[in-house]
Length: 173
Image (cartoon, rainbow, N blue to C red; front, top):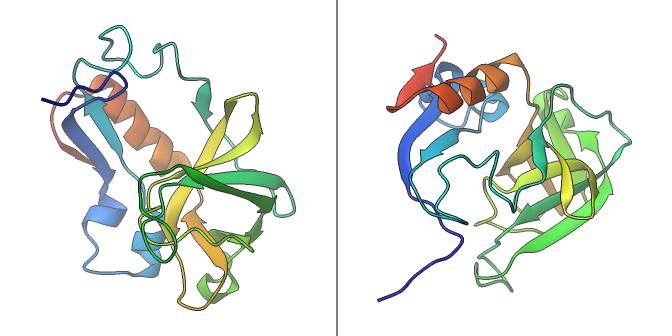
């Protein structure tokens, strides 16, 4: 039997309609490639609220950083030289994806591979705390950059639904 002192089980999932209603890897789905999970008891001290769990020092961005800001990107890459079992990060100067009309973020010179999807992007990361403003979404083969959506009002609405809701929910529409 395996036990996990820092794990939670998802009880409900929350996603925005702008992602759920897309049929593939479109610009709309990439701009909205994030979601939230309502979790059951687990983690530290049996809490169900990730916002009050003693190990968290993160907040969700109310505003986005700017191109040129220094950021940190985390993930569990599982392709190439990685196994998916270790947390890996990149830090660098934020820019946007010109192939997507600058509608999504880009972190150049970051070799995180497949398996890192959903990993948080932080601004102001220091001492184990920071503000989450995106998550790892996609990469282009042969390009040493990673890409993520820009959080906005749809992200906030979905997050708020997850905090108050109890069943799987598609927000907006």
